[in-house]
Image (cartoon, rainbow, N blue to C red):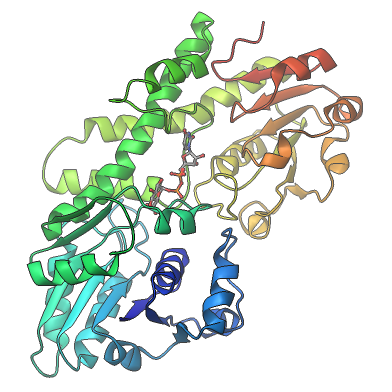
Length: 432
Ligand code: UGA
Protein backbone atom coordinates (compact mmCIF):
# COMPACT_ATOMS: atom_id res chain seq x y z
CA UNK A 1 0.00 0.00 0.00
CA UNK A 2 1.14 3.57 -0.67
CA UNK A 3 0.47 6.06 2.09
CA UNK A 4 1.12 9.80 2.32
CA UNK A 5 1.89 11.37 5.68
CA UNK A 6 1.64 15.17 5.80
CA UNK A 7 3.70 16.71 8.63
CA UNK A 8 7.07 15.20 9.57
CA UNK A 9 7.20 16.03 13.27
CA UNK A 10 7.60 13.34 15.92
CA UNK A 11 4.11 11.89 15.32
CA UNK A 12 4.35 12.09 11.52
CA UNK A 13 7.80 10.61 11.34
CA UNK A 14 7.04 7.82 13.80
CA UNK A 15 3.79 7.00 11.98
CA UNK A 16 5.52 6.99 8.59
CA UNK A 17 8.28 4.68 9.81
CA UNK A 18 5.77 2.40 11.49
CA UNK A 19 3.96 2.03 8.16
CA UNK A 20 7.30 1.31 6.44
CA UNK A 21 7.95 -1.41 9.02
CA UNK A 22 4.52 -2.86 8.25
CA UNK A 23 5.57 -3.21 4.60
CA UNK A 24 4.21 -0.05 2.97
CA UNK A 25 5.75 2.67 0.82
CA UNK A 26 5.38 6.07 2.43
CA UNK A 27 5.53 9.60 1.03
CA UNK A 28 6.41 12.00 3.83
CA UNK A 29 5.57 15.64 3.16
CA UNK A 30 6.72 18.70 5.10
CA UNK A 31 6.97 22.41 4.32
CA UNK A 32 10.31 22.78 6.09
CA UNK A 33 12.91 22.18 3.37
CA UNK A 34 15.79 22.34 5.80
CA UNK A 35 14.27 19.55 7.91
CA UNK A 36 13.67 17.48 4.76
CA UNK A 37 17.29 17.80 3.68
CA UNK A 38 18.39 16.33 7.00
CA UNK A 39 15.74 13.61 6.94
CA UNK A 40 16.86 12.54 3.47
CA UNK A 41 20.32 11.82 4.86
CA UNK A 42 18.91 10.02 7.88
CA UNK A 43 19.13 12.81 10.46
CA UNK A 44 16.10 13.50 12.62
CA UNK A 45 15.47 16.90 14.24
CA UNK A 46 14.46 15.46 17.63
CA UNK A 47 15.94 13.05 20.17
CA UNK A 48 13.76 9.94 19.97
CA UNK A 49 15.42 6.57 20.66
CA UNK A 50 15.42 4.16 17.72
CA UNK A 51 13.91 6.54 15.19
CA UNK A 52 17.11 7.53 13.40
CA UNK A 53 18.23 3.92 12.85
CA UNK A 54 14.86 2.95 11.47
CA UNK A 55 14.89 5.98 9.19
CA UNK A 56 18.28 4.96 7.82
CA UNK A 57 17.02 1.41 7.25
CA UNK A 58 13.97 2.57 5.28
CA UNK A 59 15.90 5.19 3.31
CA UNK A 60 18.20 2.40 2.19
CA UNK A 61 15.23 0.21 1.26
CA UNK A 62 13.64 3.19 -0.51
CA UNK A 63 10.41 2.62 1.37
CA UNK A 64 10.27 6.23 2.58
CA UNK A 65 10.41 9.30 0.38
CA UNK A 66 10.53 12.92 1.58
CA UNK A 67 9.11 15.84 -0.34
CA UNK A 68 7.95 19.41 0.17
CA UNK A 69 5.55 19.16 -2.76
CA UNK A 70 1.97 18.90 -1.61
CA UNK A 71 0.56 18.28 -5.14
CA UNK A 72 2.49 15.06 -5.75
CA UNK A 73 1.95 13.99 -2.12
CA UNK A 74 -1.82 14.22 -2.55
CA UNK A 75 -1.84 12.68 -6.01
CA UNK A 76 0.59 9.90 -5.05
CA UNK A 77 -1.58 7.95 -2.52
CA UNK A 78 -5.17 7.05 -1.86
CA UNK A 79 -4.66 7.22 1.91
CA UNK A 80 -3.44 10.53 3.35
CA UNK A 81 -2.53 10.91 7.03
CA UNK A 82 -2.61 14.42 8.54
CA UNK A 83 -0.03 14.73 11.33
CA UNK A 84 0.50 18.47 11.65
CA UNK A 85 0.65 20.45 14.89
CA UNK A 86 -2.43 21.75 16.69
CA UNK A 87 -0.96 24.23 19.20
CA UNK A 88 -2.94 25.88 22.00
CA UNK A 89 -4.40 29.34 21.62
CA UNK A 90 -4.52 31.80 24.54
CA UNK A 91 -8.04 30.70 25.50
CA UNK A 92 -7.04 27.00 25.56
CA UNK A 93 -8.73 26.14 22.26
CA UNK A 94 -6.76 24.32 19.56
CA UNK A 95 -5.31 26.27 16.68
CA UNK A 96 -6.47 24.34 13.61
CA UNK A 97 -4.77 26.63 11.10
CA UNK A 98 -2.31 23.95 9.89
CA UNK A 99 -4.97 21.24 9.64
CA UNK A 100 -7.18 23.60 7.62
CA UNK A 101 -4.31 24.51 5.31
CA UNK A 102 -3.55 20.83 4.62
CA UNK A 103 -7.23 19.98 4.11
CA UNK A 104 -7.62 22.78 1.57
CA UNK A 105 -4.56 21.58 -0.34
CA UNK A 106 -5.87 18.01 -0.34
CA UNK A 107 -9.15 19.25 -1.82
CA UNK A 108 -7.43 21.42 -4.37
CA UNK A 109 -5.09 18.72 -5.64
CA UNK A 110 -7.47 15.78 -5.27
CA UNK A 111 -7.27 13.57 -8.36
CA UNK A 112 -9.53 10.71 -7.31
CA UNK A 113 -11.31 9.26 -4.26
CA UNK A 114 -9.23 9.62 -1.07
CA UNK A 115 -9.28 8.46 2.50
CA UNK A 116 -8.04 11.27 4.74
CA UNK A 117 -6.95 10.13 8.19
CA UNK A 118 -6.52 12.60 11.00
CA UNK A 119 -3.82 11.64 13.48
CA UNK A 120 -3.28 15.14 14.81
CA UNK A 121 -5.08 15.63 18.14
CA UNK A 122 -8.11 17.68 17.20
CA UNK A 123 -11.27 18.81 19.00
CA UNK A 124 -14.43 16.79 18.61
CA UNK A 125 -16.14 17.68 15.35
CA UNK A 126 -12.93 18.60 13.51
CA UNK A 127 -13.19 15.60 11.18
CA UNK A 128 -16.43 17.03 9.84
CA UNK A 129 -14.77 20.41 9.35
CA UNK A 130 -11.86 18.76 7.54
CA UNK A 131 -14.35 17.21 5.11
CA UNK A 132 -15.94 20.62 4.58
CA UNK A 133 -12.56 22.29 3.99
CA UNK A 134 -11.62 19.59 1.46
CA UNK A 135 -14.91 19.68 -0.44
CA UNK A 136 -15.02 23.47 -0.69
CA UNK A 137 -11.47 23.49 -2.14
CA UNK A 138 -12.08 20.78 -4.75
CA UNK A 139 -11.87 21.71 -8.41
CA UNK A 140 -13.75 18.54 -9.42
CA UNK A 141 -16.11 16.60 -7.15
CA UNK A 142 -14.30 13.51 -5.82
CA UNK A 143 -15.28 11.27 -2.94
CA UNK A 144 -13.48 11.87 0.34
CA UNK A 145 -13.87 9.72 3.47
CA UNK A 146 -12.60 11.09 6.76
CA UNK A 147 -11.13 8.79 9.42
CA UNK A 148 -9.77 9.61 12.87
CA UNK A 149 -6.89 7.37 14.02
CA UNK A 150 -5.59 9.04 17.19
CA UNK A 151 -2.04 8.47 18.36
CA UNK A 152 -1.13 7.19 21.80
CA UNK A 153 2.64 7.57 21.46
CA UNK A 154 4.76 8.62 24.40
CA UNK A 155 7.80 10.71 23.59
CA UNK A 156 10.88 8.70 24.41
CA UNK A 157 9.18 5.40 23.52
CA UNK A 158 7.23 6.56 20.46
CA UNK A 159 8.50 3.86 18.15
CA UNK A 160 7.81 1.04 20.59
CA UNK A 161 4.32 2.42 21.26
CA UNK A 162 3.60 2.68 17.53
CA UNK A 163 4.59 -0.94 16.88
CA UNK A 164 3.18 -2.40 20.12
CA UNK A 165 0.02 -0.42 20.86
CA UNK A 166 -2.45 -1.39 23.60
CA UNK A 167 -5.23 -0.69 21.11
CA UNK A 168 -5.86 0.99 17.79
CA UNK A 169 -8.81 3.33 17.50
CA UNK A 170 -10.32 3.98 14.09
CA UNK A 171 -13.23 6.37 13.87
CA UNK A 172 -15.22 7.02 10.73
CA UNK A 173 -18.73 7.49 9.53
CA UNK A 174 -17.77 5.51 6.38
CA UNK A 175 -17.53 1.84 7.22
CA UNK A 176 -15.49 0.87 4.15
CA UNK A 177 -12.89 3.58 4.81
CA UNK A 178 -12.56 2.42 8.43
CA UNK A 179 -12.05 -1.17 7.24
CA UNK A 180 -9.33 -0.14 4.78
CA UNK A 181 -7.47 1.76 7.52
CA UNK A 182 -7.94 -1.17 9.92
CA UNK A 183 -6.34 -3.50 7.35
CA UNK A 184 -3.19 -1.35 7.39
CA UNK A 185 -2.61 -2.66 10.93
CA UNK A 186 -3.34 -6.30 10.10
CA UNK A 187 0.00 -7.60 11.37
CA UNK A 188 -0.23 -5.77 14.71
CA UNK A 189 -1.77 -7.95 17.38
CA UNK A 190 -3.97 -5.78 19.61
CA UNK A 191 -7.64 -4.82 19.91
CA UNK A 192 -8.71 -2.60 17.02
CA UNK A 193 -11.87 -0.70 17.62
CA UNK A 194 -13.98 0.98 14.99
CA UNK A 195 -16.08 3.87 16.22
CA UNK A 196 -17.92 6.90 14.94
CA UNK A 197 -15.65 9.75 13.81
CA UNK A 198 -16.42 11.99 16.80
CA UNK A 199 -16.01 9.13 19.28
CA UNK A 200 -12.43 8.48 18.20
CA UNK A 201 -11.63 12.18 18.52
CA UNK A 202 -12.96 12.24 22.08
CA UNK A 203 -11.27 8.96 23.07
CA UNK A 204 -7.90 10.64 22.50
CA UNK A 205 -8.63 13.58 24.82
CA UNK A 206 -10.27 11.39 27.42
CA UNK A 207 -7.24 9.08 27.54
CA UNK A 208 -4.78 11.93 28.06
CA UNK A 209 -6.98 13.65 30.65
CA UNK A 210 -7.42 10.38 32.55
CA UNK A 211 -3.68 9.73 32.64
CA UNK A 212 -3.00 13.27 33.85
CA UNK A 213 -5.74 12.77 36.45
CA UNK A 214 -4.00 9.68 37.83
CA UNK A 215 -0.81 11.67 38.27
CA UNK A 216 -2.51 14.69 39.84
CA UNK A 217 -4.47 12.37 42.09
CA UNK A 218 -1.41 10.60 43.48
CA UNK A 219 0.38 13.95 43.74
CA UNK A 220 -2.41 15.32 45.92
CA UNK A 221 -2.30 12.16 48.05
CA UNK A 222 1.49 12.53 48.32
CA UNK A 223 1.05 15.82 50.20
CA UNK A 224 -1.16 14.07 52.76
CA UNK A 225 1.51 11.34 52.95
CA UNK A 226 4.04 14.06 53.83
CA UNK A 227 1.83 15.35 56.57
CA UNK A 228 0.90 11.91 57.96
CA UNK A 229 4.27 10.17 57.61
CA UNK A 230 3.15 7.65 54.99
CA UNK A 231 5.20 6.36 52.04
CA UNK A 232 3.41 7.31 48.82
CA UNK A 233 5.04 4.59 46.67
CA UNK A 234 3.45 2.01 49.02
CA UNK A 235 0.09 3.66 48.40
CA UNK A 236 0.64 3.52 44.62
CA UNK A 237 1.64 -0.14 44.85
CA UNK A 238 -1.23 -0.96 47.19
CA UNK A 239 -3.88 0.57 44.96
CA UNK A 240 -2.20 -0.28 41.63
CA UNK A 241 -2.54 -4.01 42.24
CA UNK A 242 -6.28 -3.57 41.98
CA UNK A 243 -6.79 -4.30 38.28
CA UNK A 244 -9.58 -1.72 38.17
CA UNK A 245 -6.96 0.93 39.02
CA UNK A 246 -3.69 -0.38 37.52
CA UNK A 247 -0.13 0.53 38.55
CA UNK A 248 0.84 2.95 35.74
CA UNK A 249 0.96 6.72 36.03
CA UNK A 250 0.92 6.68 39.81
CA UNK A 251 4.45 7.97 40.33
CA UNK A 252 4.28 11.01 42.57
CA UNK A 253 6.60 13.92 41.90
CA UNK A 254 6.86 17.44 40.55
CA UNK A 255 3.98 16.85 38.12
CA UNK A 256 3.22 16.42 34.44
CA UNK A 257 4.34 18.56 31.53
CA UNK A 258 5.14 18.14 27.86
CA UNK A 259 3.56 19.05 24.59
CA UNK A 260 0.45 16.92 25.08
CA UNK A 261 -1.19 16.83 28.52
CA UNK A 262 -1.19 20.62 29.16
CA UNK A 263 -2.45 21.44 25.66
CA UNK A 264 -5.01 18.66 25.48
CA UNK A 265 -6.50 19.31 28.92
CA UNK A 266 -6.81 23.03 28.11
CA UNK A 267 -8.50 22.14 24.84
CA UNK A 268 -10.88 19.69 26.55
CA UNK A 269 -11.82 22.35 29.11
CA UNK A 270 -12.55 24.71 26.24
CA UNK A 271 -14.81 22.06 24.66
CA UNK A 272 -16.70 21.72 27.96
CA UNK A 273 -17.14 25.47 28.19
CA UNK A 274 -18.42 25.65 24.63
CA UNK A 275 -20.93 22.96 25.59
CA UNK A 276 -21.81 24.94 28.78
CA UNK A 277 -20.78 22.04 31.05
CA UNK A 278 -18.58 22.73 34.08
CA UNK A 279 -15.21 20.92 33.71
CA UNK A 280 -14.79 20.45 37.47
CA UNK A 281 -12.43 17.47 37.53
CA UNK A 282 -10.40 18.77 34.58
CA UNK A 283 -9.81 22.07 36.35
CA UNK A 284 -8.75 20.24 39.51
CA UNK A 285 -6.27 18.15 37.47
CA UNK A 286 -4.66 21.37 36.23
CA UNK A 287 -4.76 23.10 39.63
CA UNK A 288 -3.11 20.24 41.53
CA UNK A 289 -0.39 20.13 38.91
CA UNK A 290 0.34 23.85 39.23
CA UNK A 291 0.23 23.74 43.05
CA UNK A 292 2.65 20.84 43.13
CA UNK A 293 5.43 23.14 41.97
CA UNK A 294 4.65 25.75 44.63
CA UNK A 295 4.56 22.98 47.21
CA UNK A 296 8.06 21.82 46.24
CA UNK A 297 9.40 25.40 46.38
CA UNK A 298 8.03 25.62 49.93
CA UNK A 299 9.83 22.40 50.84
CA UNK A 300 13.01 23.83 49.38
CA UNK A 301 12.66 27.02 51.46
CA UNK A 302 12.12 24.98 54.61
CA UNK A 303 15.50 23.35 54.00
CA UNK A 304 17.66 26.20 52.72
CA UNK A 305 15.87 29.27 54.06
CA UNK A 306 15.39 32.24 51.71
CA UNK A 307 16.18 31.69 48.05
CA UNK A 308 17.82 34.99 47.16
CA UNK A 309 21.48 34.60 46.13
CA UNK A 310 21.42 30.86 46.80
CA UNK A 311 23.21 28.60 44.31
CA UNK A 312 20.73 26.03 43.06
CA UNK A 313 21.91 23.12 40.90
CA UNK A 314 19.22 21.75 38.61
CA UNK A 315 19.42 18.16 37.35
CA UNK A 316 17.25 17.74 34.26
CA UNK A 317 15.45 20.10 31.91
CA UNK A 318 13.26 17.92 29.65
CA UNK A 319 9.69 17.20 30.77
CA UNK A 320 10.67 13.54 31.19
CA UNK A 321 13.71 11.37 30.37
CA UNK A 322 14.66 10.10 26.90
CA UNK A 323 13.46 13.19 25.11
CA UNK A 324 14.90 16.63 24.36
CA UNK A 325 11.43 18.18 24.57
CA UNK A 326 11.28 21.00 27.11
CA UNK A 327 7.81 22.26 26.29
CA UNK A 328 5.81 22.90 29.50
CA UNK A 329 8.52 21.12 31.42
CA UNK A 330 8.14 21.39 35.22
CA UNK A 331 11.89 22.04 35.30
CA UNK A 332 11.47 25.27 33.30
CA UNK A 333 8.65 26.37 35.61
CA UNK A 334 10.74 25.69 38.73
CA UNK A 335 13.76 27.52 37.32
CA UNK A 336 11.62 30.51 36.35
CA UNK A 337 10.23 30.82 39.89
CA UNK A 338 13.65 30.37 41.50
CA UNK A 339 15.21 32.94 39.22
CA UNK A 340 12.49 35.47 40.01
CA UNK A 341 13.25 34.91 43.70
CA UNK A 342 16.92 35.79 43.10
CA UNK A 343 18.53 32.33 42.98
CA UNK A 344 21.67 31.70 40.95
CA UNK A 345 20.92 28.69 38.79
CA UNK A 346 23.27 26.14 37.31
CA UNK A 347 21.78 23.39 35.21
CA UNK A 348 22.68 20.11 33.54
CA UNK A 349 20.73 17.83 31.22
CA UNK A 350 22.33 15.11 29.07
CA UNK A 351 20.25 15.98 25.97
CA UNK A 352 17.81 18.82 26.48
CA UNK A 353 19.87 22.00 26.90
CA UNK A 354 19.90 23.20 23.33
CA UNK A 355 16.89 25.52 23.46
CA UNK A 356 17.16 26.48 27.10
CA UNK A 357 18.94 29.82 26.63
CA UNK A 358 16.02 31.19 24.59
CA UNK A 359 13.73 30.68 27.58
CA UNK A 360 16.10 31.33 30.49
CA UNK A 361 19.08 33.36 29.31
CA UNK A 362 20.53 33.86 32.81
CA UNK A 363 21.01 30.24 33.87
CA UNK A 364 24.50 28.74 33.74
CA UNK A 365 24.61 25.64 31.57
CA UNK A 366 27.10 23.11 32.94
CA UNK A 367 28.86 20.44 30.92
CA UNK A 368 30.36 18.64 33.94
CA UNK A 369 28.82 17.53 37.21
CA UNK A 370 31.78 19.11 39.06
CA UNK A 371 30.86 22.53 37.74
CA UNK A 372 27.21 21.95 38.62
CA UNK A 373 27.84 20.93 42.22
CA UNK A 374 30.61 23.36 43.17
CA UNK A 375 29.48 25.68 46.00
CA UNK A 376 25.89 24.59 45.58
CA UNK A 377 23.27 25.25 48.27
CA UNK A 378 20.95 22.61 46.88
CA UNK A 379 20.63 19.99 44.14
CA UNK A 380 17.12 19.90 42.70
CA UNK A 381 16.42 16.83 40.53
CA UNK A 382 13.62 17.51 38.07
CA UNK A 383 13.97 14.87 35.33
CA UNK A 384 14.73 11.25 36.18
CA UNK A 385 17.44 10.58 33.59
CA UNK A 386 18.97 7.18 34.36
CA UNK A 387 22.48 8.61 34.65
CA UNK A 388 21.38 10.77 37.62
CA UNK A 389 20.63 7.73 39.76
CA UNK A 390 24.24 6.73 40.40
CA UNK A 391 26.19 9.96 40.47
CA UNK A 392 29.26 10.28 42.62
CA UNK A 393 27.29 11.63 45.57
CA UNK A 394 30.25 11.50 47.97
CA UNK A 395 32.13 13.84 45.69
CA UNK A 396 29.07 16.07 45.28
CA UNK A 397 28.71 16.25 49.08
CA UNK A 398 32.31 17.44 49.45
CA UNK A 399 31.92 20.09 46.75
CA UNK A 400 28.65 21.61 47.91
CA UNK A 401 28.29 24.52 50.30
CA UNK A 402 25.09 23.16 51.77
CA UNK A 403 24.35 19.46 51.11
CA UNK A 404 20.62 19.51 50.41
CA UNK A 405 18.90 17.38 47.78
CA UNK A 406 15.34 17.93 46.62
CA UNK A 407 14.23 14.92 44.59
CA UNK A 408 11.43 16.09 42.30
CA UNK A 409 10.88 12.58 40.92
CA UNK A 410 11.32 10.34 43.99
CA UNK A 411 14.01 8.27 42.32
CA UNK A 412 17.13 8.68 44.41
CA UNK A 413 18.35 6.25 47.05
CA UNK A 414 17.69 8.41 50.09
CA UNK A 415 19.21 5.91 52.55
CA UNK A 416 22.56 6.20 50.82
CA UNK A 417 22.32 9.96 50.52
CA UNK A 418 21.47 10.34 54.20
CA UNK A 419 24.38 8.08 55.17
CA UNK A 420 26.70 10.40 53.24
CA UNK A 421 25.27 13.33 55.19
CA UNK A 422 22.77 14.93 52.81
CA UNK A 423 19.51 16.51 53.86
CA UNK A 424 17.09 14.77 51.50
CA UNK A 425 13.51 15.57 50.54
CA UNK A 426 11.27 13.51 48.25
CA UNK A 427 7.51 14.04 48.29
CA UNK A 428 5.60 11.53 50.41
CA UNK A 429 8.77 9.62 51.26
CA UNK A 430 9.34 8.37 54.78
CA UNK A 431 13.06 8.94 55.27
CA UNK A 432 13.40 8.73 59.08
C1 UGA B 1 1.30 11.44 26.48
C2 UGA B 1 0.51 10.12 26.54
O1 UGA B 1 1.08 9.26 27.53
C3 UGA B 1 0.53 9.42 25.18
O2 UGA B 1 -0.27 8.26 25.23
C4 UGA B 1 -0.03 10.39 24.14
O3 UGA B 1 -0.05 9.82 22.85
C5 UGA B 1 0.81 11.64 24.11
O4 UGA B 1 0.79 12.26 25.43
C6 UGA B 1 0.25 12.58 23.08
O5 UGA B 1 -0.91 13.03 23.24
O6 UGA B 1 0.87 12.79 22.05
P1 UGA B 1 3.91 12.10 26.62
O7 UGA B 1 3.42 13.51 26.76
O8 UGA B 1 4.97 11.81 25.63
O9 UGA B 1 2.67 11.13 26.23
O10 UGA B 1 4.46 11.65 28.02
P2 UGA B 1 3.99 10.75 29.26
O11 UGA B 1 4.84 9.57 29.36
O12 UGA B 1 2.53 10.54 29.21
O13 UGA B 1 4.35 11.73 30.48
C7 UGA B 1 3.69 12.98 30.64
C8 UGA B 1 4.16 13.67 31.92
O14 UGA B 1 3.67 12.98 33.07
C9 UGA B 1 5.68 13.73 32.10
O15 UGA B 1 6.02 15.02 32.55
C10 UGA B 1 5.98 12.68 33.15
O16 UGA B 1 7.11 12.95 33.89
C11 UGA B 1 4.72 12.76 34.00
N1 UGA B 1 4.42 11.53 34.78
C12 UGA B 1 4.12 10.36 34.13
C13 UGA B 1 4.42 11.57 36.17
O17 UGA B 1 4.69 12.63 36.79
N2 UGA B 1 4.10 10.44 36.88
C14 UGA B 1 3.79 9.27 36.26
O18 UGA B 1 3.49 8.26 36.96
C15 UGA B 1 3.81 9.23 34.85
